[in-house]
Length: 243
Image (cartoon, helix red, strand yellow):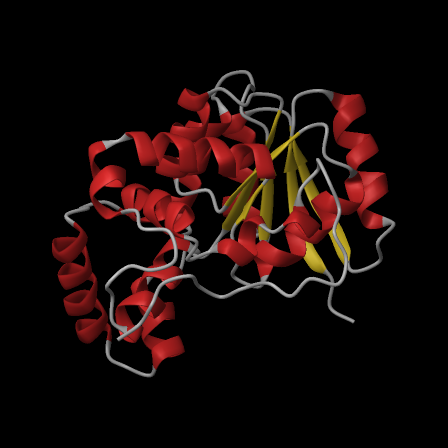
């Protein structure tokens, strides 16, 4: 069985070593490197190419958010999962903008972290319940949210709904083209049309909209949150009403 390769970026040694032992006990995950600073995380990602990076925000020399930006600029296929003690709105906003595909709080159990690693490795996005709620609340308060958020449906075509989900899940144009069976040029055209239609012109904004509208509801489901575990529920792909 091929195990998921993970880089742990955390400046507290005892936290880092403890997390490594716990998630490796799952059997399908291997911690291939550990970083104590943001700069070290960038270099190790460059050298080792781990599939998933579990990143703390507060680290010496270079913080986790800037490290994430630089990692994804060099390696856009990398999946960064933020694991932090911070849940302030400004941190949440910056995490979304950085390109990370998930944000869990440090009170999350190791089992949930392992599930999150699997989810982002498969192309999903993971936000703990409290983080997702803050994103939804903030978006609904914003002018874009008031204008575009409609519980139960938004007037997007099926193709636009598919594209929005893939963008929000962190896929680049090449991956989206392969998934949808269309050319990269067509993806770029659809992406531009989607942004114009929603009047949202950056990926961070599209991700916030996707969370608020329920497009990536499966990525914030209760089975993957630290606050509560729910069994037997099937994740929804989208709440958008295609036409």
